[in-house]
Image (cartoon, rainbow, N blue to C red; front, top):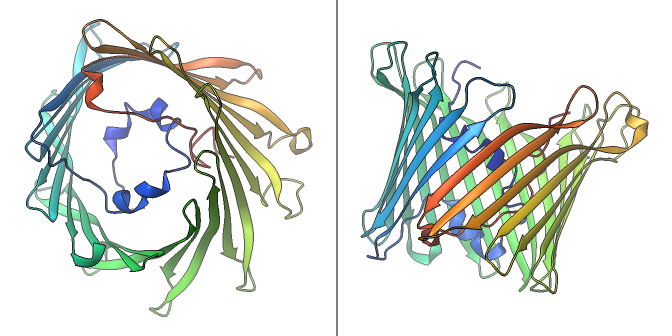
Length: 391
């Protein structure tokens, strides 16, 4: 691909990606569709954090420092990543600066700048992402997100623009339309993907959803590339999410190629359990049938002393021995312990299957955060395709 987007801000978060929310609270769907948001409170909420990451067997550990300040409708996040240099000292490697400002009662503007380092250690701009989100009468939300990279002369060139429109078409139906624009051969921008997602609230805790993705065809029109549909059902405490992925076959007709079933439950002691099973049709020896390919299980606990722990286990089918069923391929353990003076200490350990069929530690993150009460983090297993190695 000629234009590649560089999401450097995800590097430090790699272990945490495995612990993102799988079953998003339905009430938050409309709020998160447009992207960034900023608090209108004048209360100054800030925190700092430092993270040490060590990959076993690697001589190049990384260290990350983060600061977050929020006051008067303005939020500033700074992230600096250092890596061990050849002389045994940490050297600057990457910097990410993000500022979110509430322009007025209806508009939020965010700009994020990513800086790398050249061979001499000088800071160089790598990418700029700007987003503006506007809330319109009737609950409609429009957002435009533009990503630019520097060219050979130091000027910024747009590599991607995403336009999104979310509106409530009826009291129970929300529709989100998204258009992705990428550079064309004539130097301008052209639409390269369109999606439309419809969410219909059946009852208080039951929702149906359908998302269609269209890609340009050779005749200048659009052709259906993928459909994702399903339901979310719950009783206010436990929930189940089922989703199908359909794609057109050689005959042009849609057929199911993947199915996921996610279950979320809360125990009497407050423990949260999540299970996501993924079924696929492209498995060796499956003959095009839907077979269980992956299972992700998570258990989240909070002790009386405030310690929180989450363990996520990923089981996958062995492509070389498809008849053997699922095997444990990855384990992620996240432990957050409250400390003195309003600090949190967190350890994230990732274990993965090695060539000998044993689980070995591949990543360890240790993190210290001051003033953790300023933010709240919810942890659950990853979405299908985000946990464990790809097939």
